[in-house]
Image (cartoon, rainbow, N blue to C red; front, side, top):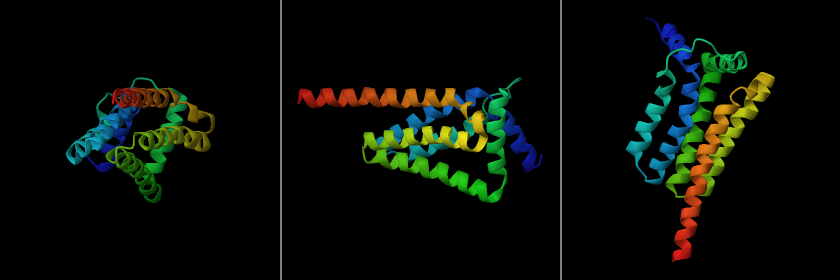
Length: 164
């Protein structure tokens, strides 16, 4: 099996919507480990998160608009320069989020996470037109999870401050 066959096999599985919805959960876990200052937890979760795109079977059908977005993503990752830039931006985003939570800055961490998720939609619209709205469901899911947990933590912190 050559590298291209492995990449094609992985991409087919990445078309499964479950692989898109699971990633925000891993972002929360990475941020938790950053908050707890656990390099081991961050690294293991990051590796598991990056492998999650191939956990699910290839879907029988896919939304044609999402197919356009994912084909654009595949094109970005298939050209050396754009692949390096795309991967660099993704890693920088995770590092910035980890740095914020490592320093216990919940507000900055949430700003970074929200900016990245909203930026993903904006860039999708810029580069794929109306098709860029296709991943809005999993992005909203990510925003709800991240901001819901953030809201819960803020309320807990506020209650602790009042109790003191």
